[in-house]
Figure 1 (cartoon, rainbow, N blue to C red):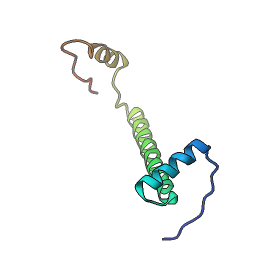
Figure 2: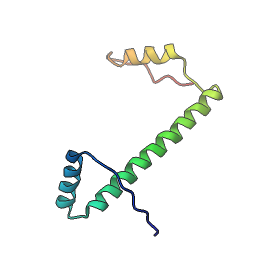
Figure 3: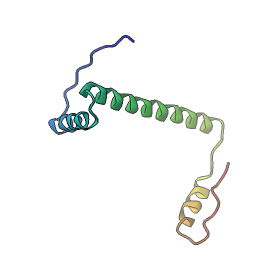
Figure 4: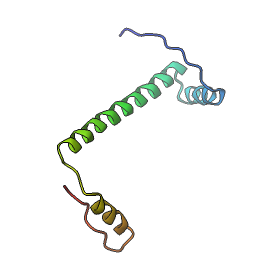
Length: 87
């Protein structure tokens, strides 16, 4: 696998936490950083995908009425909450 070196300035407390994790897991610091960065990028890609999916639903009119959502949310504190509103 080809790689590219990236450089980042991180606050000392974060750098210490990374070093502590590396020592505890008996892994190199670079492994910890790669794992964390890969997880964050994956989460951001999923957030973007879900945003686009939601925007497509709105454009297609697949929405739930705000009043229905508010009534459902208010009912969650009740003994018998309302069913989740559907489109």
